[in-house]
Length: 197
Image 1 (cartoon, helix red, strand yellow):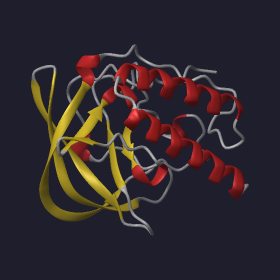
Image 2 (image 1 turned 60 degrees about the vertical axis):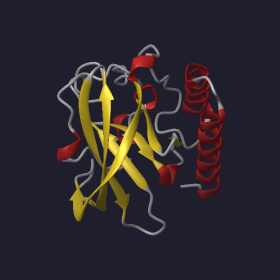
Image 3 (image 1 turned 180 degrees about the horizontal axis):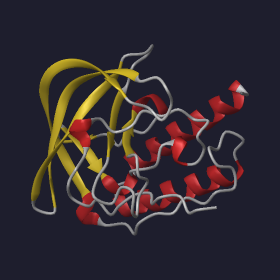
Image 4 (image 1 turned 180 degrees about the vertical axis):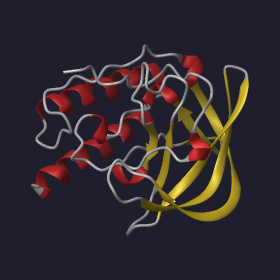
């Protein structure tokens, strides 16, 4: 692995999410996010699927919400990955939010490895159909995926949910959705399942 090209990838993702947080119009931020990700997937040496074109659901403003973060009992969990070994995370909170009139919640985790970071992955009723079967990521601050806060609440814009790298290449090992983060409702937003072939 070329560490400097990986560093470049990470810099670009961090810069992209800084642009997303600064943009006042969420749909314009999403258009920029999609365009940059398509370019990175097509050309960057660290792309999980060089030449692939990520596919997205249409932007839906109803799937952008704010989450009230409540503390949860701190529990260290070994979260299953796409590889043989799980990763250690600590659940530290729960984000409660409304999506299309339904009250939902997702657990928030802190990566226990060096440096740490907030991690929020989820599966939903589209998983295995229109979206990647294992899960999608919404927040992964170790990798720059951070939508910020508004008025003390966490921005949960599901239009920005994306597939883990293992959706494109099994050589990548990715943490999956823990049991508490499997929604029974469809979340038809964000990145779709990779197209076959």
